[in-house]
Image 1 (spheres, rainbow, N blue to C red):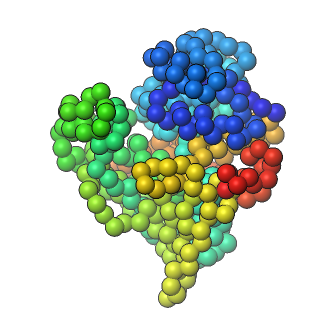
Image 2 (image 1 turned 90 degrees about the vertical axis):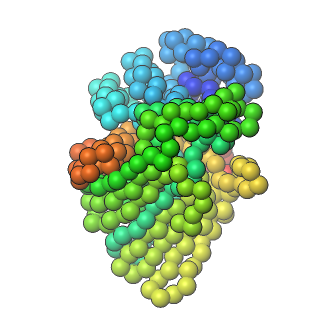
Length: 386
């Protein structure tokens, strides 16, 4: 069964979803909409779908799932409107710009018997799947502590319109945090409480993105741009999480987890592939590439490198789960828990106190290699999906 997808939000991120959608037989994009009609018209012509207004898209009865690719500040409004129109929702991260809005989305979906899914779906990619399998099989013993770090010098150097990244609902924890926090929840289970400190290095940021229409303009910074947090997991593991847009260069690994029997390095959870490294006891690092696994092969150029980028995988897995009548993995409860952790980090950084996470979740079921292969056309593992 193929579920019909209507996209709301035709900005930068919509390209990869539209490019990847034909890989997945469970979904088919039929329409797109944007507050800027010219943006919807451009993507419609490029990808062969129908362009229309947001109201028209929500009113159609031949759309099963609304794919919400708007900016974070609009996530709640669009998702709630889609649910009100009787459609399932899959949204880009974060679930919403505030915890209250996130709760409202999940409650509205449950009240109507509808599904909510949310990015990031990189947790279903080859690298996190491999790391989880190793942890579950006891490769490093019981996870005890670790680090996660997403550090750069911000979005104003490459994004065509980075303004919203520095407004409420933006900042490195809201923007990049979902990738790292979702990966950690999949690997270690839910977070119980957080402590944090934070700051912003600059009151204004200068846009230097080549060809940006606002190049040379300054953006007022309204959010914390550097945060250090301690995440205490229900399992007992403790993870130090660093998120900053004030760092020019660093040598920290994206994720390291240390257990009672060994240590693990997990590649950048912003992507779907990369190598997982394990060191048992005093042994050297044992490297496990994931490029030969489904959704592990590099397929997306960025600068002079290529990465595995299969965004839309979570939407396809959700559509498959709807058809099978089972829970989907990138679900609203996990997204709400991650949003609660993000909100807790910000609250802890601003108040300098420990914050208990009230919105819990179940650790999602692992996605096996066979299940992953079954999500792509033909049910095997075509070369371009590995």
